[in-house]
Image (tube, rainbow, N blue to C red; front, side, top):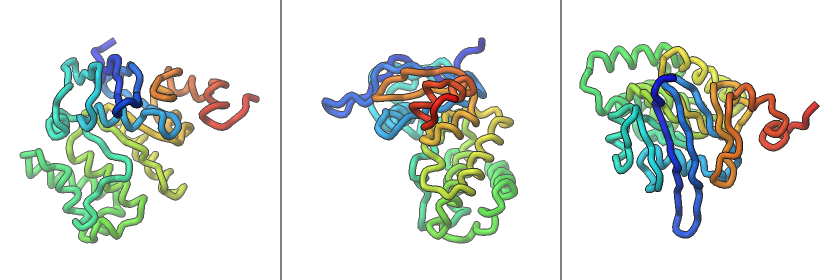
Length: 240
């Protein structure tokens, strides 16, 4: 098997005397789509914050074989690690187009950036229709599409989506997961953090189930989707 794209070894996160993440291990192969599922407070967001340089931690995180411990978020973006945060984090008083341009802040290939924006406008026609509109006036689903498109303009090698379906209408959740499925053809390594366990397992290759800062279950997403224990505890279903 090829060298891991992302490798997390014995990661622990503390907030004062509270241990939010307890010595977990995760490994994603290049181009693989993985998901971290679990209830609120399980430690998912703390794990994401550690990967993205937003939270101190113990243990090691390696990206493409090199330790990224101590690197700042902007340095990680330049290495290809890009986060779409929970809550979207768009610039509400900037236009849709300006938000997209902010996604390419570190790129120097301006001609390619313009072409990339044009491609994304084709992929997301709602954004094209509203490109001169203030981003804060978009619906929640449109804002999520904008956040993903902005992240893609950073040319990510590892894209982390933190709760992309949260608070969205079912039709927009369906659209968001269509976009997630489409990323499979791009070669981007994906880490999806999602409370909707069924959709997350259907959209990914490998899954880690997080509970109270630990990972009690992990494996192929399709296997976990059909596991009686996972159905009972995390999918709210009883085995047939």
